[in-house]
Length: 424
Image (tube, rainbow, N blue to C red):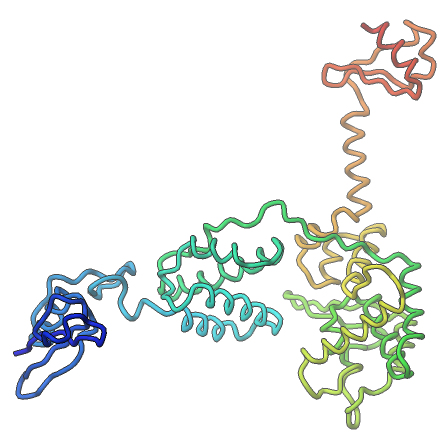
């Protein structure tokens, strides 16, 4: 038989009354003997009713209990005292670790962003279970984050992906980040394409920055590679020699198996031919700008510093490697027959993303919109011959009816007033 008693803490006012005094709030322990085995341990509670139930469970483990509730996870038959069973609950730290392990095939930049956002979120919510996090905690997290609306949009998407992962693993029943609204009227910063004069300045800066020919030849080849292929800086950093074949630059392979390749510009070919071997490379090096040693992240960081120095030397305002992608995209849309699908293939993005970011640079689209508007407003269902009503309307180009109103095109305000007075 087991006996319940309180193990008084040092600050308890009833400590002198002994363990039999049960009216305080000190931790509850149990002591006794079951099947010849002495038991003395804590019940990990201060509530007397709960302690009685726990003691009964220890004494009679095979007796069916009627005070248990079904697990909160839909479809689970496990019965618990409250909440969720051990299979369907995870602490925030364990859940984040499982999320990172499941997303191991993502790019290094995406994984780095996930780690940063979820680390800060874990520090904010503390040591809690995933199913205990509500939308209010995410709102409070946003209020303490000193970040822009654009950055919060990306972090909120990371949180949505994380909780979606937890819902799929049945650690929570709902995604609290879904009900948190995305920031409204968030406009991405428009990046203007380079004009020819700015490109000339950047190329000229490659010949003057730095102190050695090694740096200048590499920088010039990088700039021309940006200019003629619109690759991202990480792709330029790891650009390999086998991507130049038969006078063409092989960019990537599409999902349908087709290869995207561009003609090798003579100026780019000349610059790549004279690029010195990367420092630290031994023998025949596979890459133009990387020795193959170290991490690609460190390599990208070094090349970013190099390009930053070139842009500073060129004095081109707001110069950035990514603007070369915008430049080539606008040039593709500016030539006859250039489509958003062409831009998507060259840049390695989807046609919808190309349309979203580069629609305003499409000359064909603008011409088509202008023609549509001219067809709507250029022909009018009713016209009035103003010349028969007033000789002072010689400067009027046309008068028509549009939406129940007079449409007058003239460069002389006096003539317009005279026409309106005769029409009225």
